[in-house]
Each structure stands twice: as structure tokens, then as C-alpha cells.
Image (cartoon, rainbow, N blue to C red):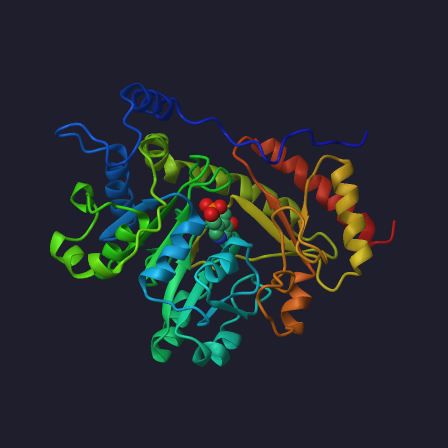
Length: 397
Ligand SMILES: *Cc1c(COP(=O)(O)O)cnc(C)c1O
């Protein structure tokens, strides 16, 4: 009998009961706007910011409407100008070059290695072309952060980290988002905490934090924040920083606070699933598993492997055969952007120079979500299916 998987790759877990109860309390209060607080009340959003700052060890945290908004706000807060080049990963998703384009700046793509991290040799070449790097920890793969920071510090390049896939991850014990000047996170449904939409911006820089807060639309009510710099810092920046509304609201914050308390447990659960998948895929002929460096604590909320130098028709055939058995895989090598995958040269608003070494890797990347609704047995079954179907196509069966 041929085994089939019947689970749903986009089904997340329910919101924890504590989050539902807190959300109902906010609804009953009617005070959904973050600055609409009763006398003496701190507000769910301000508390969430304080808790996320403590979780990451950052001095300041701002909760916002989305991860993409956090990234665009980071760029605005450091004064990126229209037409300015901003370095970023060739292997990433559309909101990243989109955030750069949203401030009128120009993405300059840096290549990807077989470890699925930013190509630091390529970065070292291009680092003189820009003053800012928007570093996307795409699919949770952390590069050698010490070497990256040395390259950027030596060149005077400011690093903003896109941690949409690394909330809860770290490099040599430093939480992802804490090496660069600013870390940006997403709380969108498919990330590590789920409020539908939402995001965070963290930094130790008081002026960046103050500007970001005013940008997010604080109506000068910044004294109601619990993870913001002192009022004097706001005094310095408030007259020349526009309001580009993108606040978080108390309803989403209420949903997120219990999830933050559970985050480290969830990370363990993701990684248990990841390891079952990884073990099951190892030594499949034609398939390259991505080995994770030991300095990295990752969050296995998705898994990638390479079908390196395969004929594109064969990749498509392997994916179709897996799909027929219920296993949904995404391919970065496809010519057109499909669903969430896309290639640097499909963003036609951004000029790009062909990168043959990167194209070779992208053409081989296969990607799969790992929602926590999958059991360990589900993961073992998925790995058996991929192994059988990839193996069969590879061997020409
Ligand atoms: C989801 C995502 C973002 C942006 O998050 P939103 O909250 O959807 O705006 C940024 N970068 C990457 C790599 C993402 O996957």
C-alpha cells in the first residue's frame, strides 16, 4: 500500500486559551487602541513590548502592524533616502525588497551559499556600494554573524536584521536581532507567534527607538510606552519625524502575550519535528540536507533541502509525485513567483545583475512548512514519502 499524508500544511495551532481570554477582556473593555487606556492601566501593547524587550535583551521594543512595516520603519528611522542603495539577500521573500522599495530605496542583491545563508564573500565585494544591509535570516538560516558584523562594521554599514523566521533563534548565544542596530520580527499567522498580523522592532539605540515610535503613529503619547527611551530623546526628534501610522492594537497584543511565554517551549516542539524530518531525509540519493552549524540555535518551523543541479523537469516531477501523496513542497527555482516563493529577478521594480552561482542554488532549493499541528509520526511519514519519490525520480524510475 502506498502511504499518503492527509495533514494540512497551512493549519496552525489554535490561539492558547489564555490568549483567547485576554482578547475577550480587551473586546469587552472596548479599549482596543493602544493609547486608549483607563487611569492607571498599562495596556496590553505596552506590556507586550516590555516583555519582548526582556525576552531579547533589547533596551527598546516597539510593536507594530506587521513585519514588513517594522522593516520599512527601521529604514526610515535611520534616514535611508529615496534612490539610496540598500544591500539585501537574493534568497528572501517579497516583503524584504518591498520594504526597501517602500522608502524609494534600491535593493542591491547579495548571493546565497549552499548553506542557504548570505554569501559573505559576495557581501565583502558589494559592501562598499551601500551604507545599509537589510539582512534576511531567510527560512531561519543564520550565517556566521561574527564575520558578517566584522565586514559591515569595517565598512561602516548599518545592519538591520529581518528575523521573521528567527524569533527565538540565536547565534553563539546572541538572540537573532541583537547583532545589528535593529531587529525586525513578524507576528503574522505563519511565523512563530500568531496574531494574524503584527510585528516588532527592537534596538538599543535611543534615537532610532524614538523615531520609530513617532513614525508608528504615537500622537506624542510616547510616555505611555514601557520599553521606550526617556521623553528628552523624543523632544529631540519629534518635530522632524512624520507619523506613518502602523501601530499594533491591544487585541493583537493580548493574543500575543501568552504566546511569548510559551515561545521557548514551542521552539523545542518545532525542533523535535525538524529533527525527525532531517533524519528521515538524510542519505536520500540526489538530495542534499542542509547541515546546521553548531553555533546556531534554530527554529525548525520550516525545512529546506537541495536538489542541486537537477534538470528542472525532474524537480517538477519529484514535487508533483510528492504532492500526489499529500506532501506540499515549494520550489524556489520556478520561473514565476508562486505563492510565497519568489526569486530576486522576479521583482522587476528592482534592477538586478545576474548571479550564476546564486541561480544554481536557488534552482535547487525545495522548501516545506512544518506547522506544529503535525505530529512526530506525521513528520516521519512525510520524510518517507519525500525520500521515496525524490529517490524514484533521481534513479529514473
Ligand atoms: C513574513 C516575512 C516578512 C514580513 O512579515 P509580514 O508580517 O508578513 O509583513 C519579512 N521577511 C520574511 C522573510 C518573511 O517571511
